[in-house]
Length: 115
Length: 111
Image 1 (tube, one colour):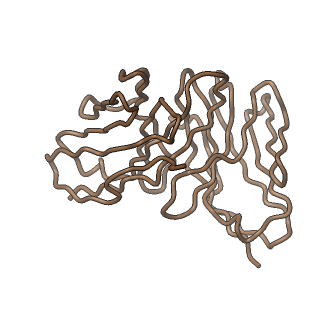
Image 2 (image 1 turned 30 degrees about the vertical axis):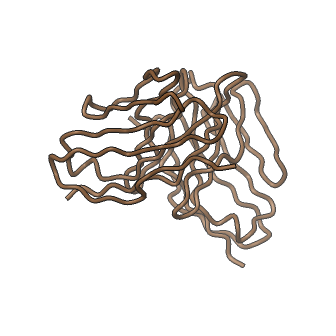
């Protein structure tokens, strides 16, 4: 049973470029969230997708956008990259329905470096 | 504005002894509190949670205590094992699906 998979694992971009990160949720999961983890900090919530719609968003600018596909996989897009966007981007999934207590399944993350 | 704070960046304990990791929060609206563990090059993995209406939850060697009046929670690991060495994140569930994380505490268990 595959867990949450993310690609690419590492990438380097320059300021002003655009990046797309991809995520496949754990089998049976239909809700995907994205988190940004800067060096020395905890993960910060970017947004959450369910039924191909953004359902909840954290305090991130519009340069951060996403998409969820019918197979529940998801993409995170960041436009006009800034040096401060350098971070580990984590995708997390869960199964909707039943009582949600906060347990998420995380992928290994995509390490983005902006030069 | 950090709503969840882990004030100890690191903790070192001897194998077999108790590890106590602490976390403070400011938002009274959090309804669940969780601990996640993270090894290098891996994503965080869920460890244990507690509802805001409880004051203790136990799962094997791991116990989480919640003191709502002090807005404080702690994770106790007894006995500590070398494999417990990792970064531990305290997290709290805000409305909807959003989790708010602390900055993490690096636990080193010496054998």
